[in-house]
Amino acid sequence: MILAGTAQGLGRVLRALRRSRVKRDVLYYLCSIYPESAYPALIADAVGASYENVVGALRGLGERYRREDSLLGLGLVEEVSIGRAKFYRVRDGAVEICRSLARHGG
Image (cartoon, rainbow, N blue to C red; front, side):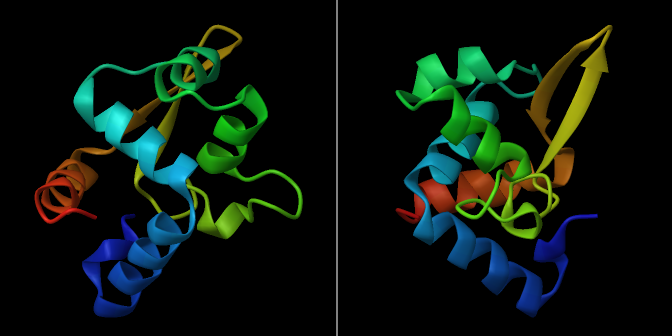
């Protein structure tokens, strides 16, 4: 479920992305490699952020990154398990949101 389907959900997505450079960069990176997926350490290297901040942006981590405002919680990213490893990719419906934000300087 992508929360951006409603006006309230879109506002929540925009607010979460505006408040966190790491979330924004992770989402843009995953959009740039769509439909491929990536593991958190690779994403961290690609966006120049720490592994912990990337994990927090993706799925929430402690007080700093709330689970409901994470990219998974917002429905923008999905987790793909391959064996014991977890990979992340942007959801099909979120690709257009990402491209629209990039076009409008979001």
